[in-house]
Amino acid sequence: MAVNDCSADAPMKRVFIVGCRRSGTTWTMLLLGQHPRVVALQQIDFFRRLAHFGRWFTARDDYGTCALTPKVRAGLASTPTEDGLARVKIADALPPSRYVELVRPLADAVYSELAAVNPNALALVEQTPEYVQVWEEILRVFPDAYFLHVVRDPRSVFCSHKSAAKSWADPTRFSHDPLSVGEEWVSDVSRARKIAGATPRYHEVRYESLRREPVQGLAAILRWLELPFDEALCERAVSACSLDKLRAGNHAPKGFFRKGEVSGWKAEMRAGELRALEHAAGSLMRELGYEPLTPAHAPAPIAVRWQLARRGLAARFRRWAWESKSPLRQAAARTLKSVPLVRKVLLRRVVRPDQHNAA
Image 1 (cartoon, rainbow, N blue to C red):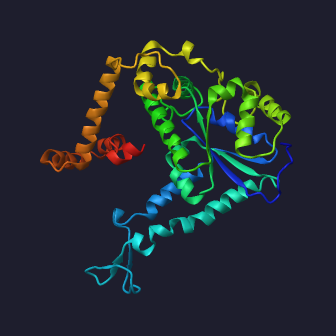
Image 2 (tube, rainbow, N blue to C red; image 1 turned 90 degrees about the horizontal axis):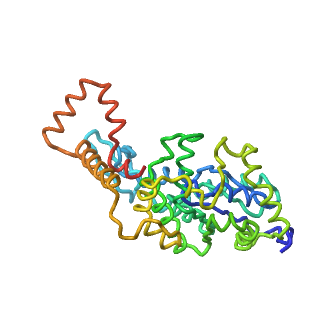
Image 3 (cartoon, one colour; image 1 turned 180 degrees about the vertical axis):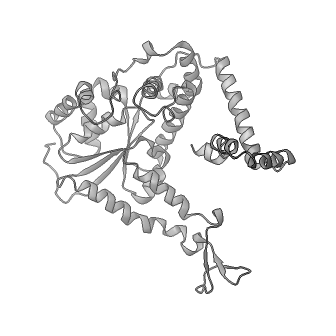
């Protein structure tokens, strides 16, 4: 298909690149951004912020949120208060069913304005891998959204996490604990693959295949998106997005683009790291064709068992600290009020169980 073969009135495609972090989503986005009729968005994270609003929108009595008034319109549920005012729940005054009706114009305006950066754009491609957490929200607002899921061997993902934590990234955001990275990979890849059951506009690409045959891989993605292209365009895009050029550019901090090797983990991972990661991710790895080196029924390494036990104790302590009604817990709370500095440190470290699970 020639690059200019497309109707000027074709609807704008909104494409969301998702996947576990450090799986090659940035490189994939930059490849697509080389197309003359594409606008690429690098991690604007709009929908995760919109999801926060969505959670507020459905709040009822959280933290006492309500509307108070002496007179309530007919048909609206309310509860009288002792001071003569009527209490109306936010979700009753503003029904959750109206959420999409109210936010879709905002989202449409945001993405339309960004697409207008290129007057000839046919597709807006956003790379925010964390959208695996809110893809349902995206489909509610944009039922015609496209999802491109980039999957990478979790062992390579771990090595990239470890490198990021030790160089350009905030180490609190990129774990170099192999068990945690393996669990994150399983969670994110599993969630992303569920998109296929919710929309026909889902396409999965393996990072390894895209690295081995980038021209053919890019052509397959453009064909899926029904965007005009020819082989020369794909070759130019791949050349422009060579890792040497990306490292010399300013799309990301120094150290962001590493070697890009398909099996570089073999020289980087220690045996204990490999066993821990494959304990967490081995089952899904086998399902996807990434053969683990650890036998399928091998017992969990001692270090992993110890780590899981510590997590269990920490979870029990969080539940006790926030939910227990025992006299001991109440006495501890009263004591901590007299030492505010210690109390502040503990509250920062002992997060609520629901907030810990969300993180």
